[in-house]
Image 1 (tube, rainbow, N blue to C red):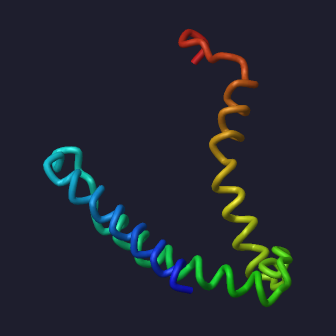
Image 2: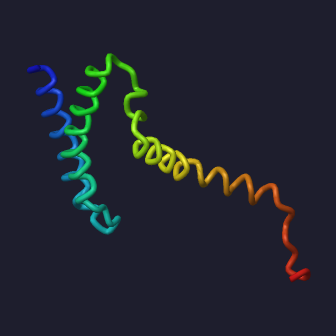
Length: 101
């Protein structure tokens, strides 16, 4: 338990140092709010994920036992592979000539 707490503290500290180090490069428009949310909520999500995996004896299918979870997973998968689908679809179509319009 102490080891996990130490690792989380070091991770948070290193993320804070990276964000503080990037401050002089502000014209890059580094948005700090999502980074801070990721640091804070990432730890909570990890704890809940580990708890769920322990309760289910390591079976990841427990996350897809309810219909809403299945639809959310399907939507997420579609969003992730949509650029590949559109790339393949555009590549399979013949090129459109400007004269044929």
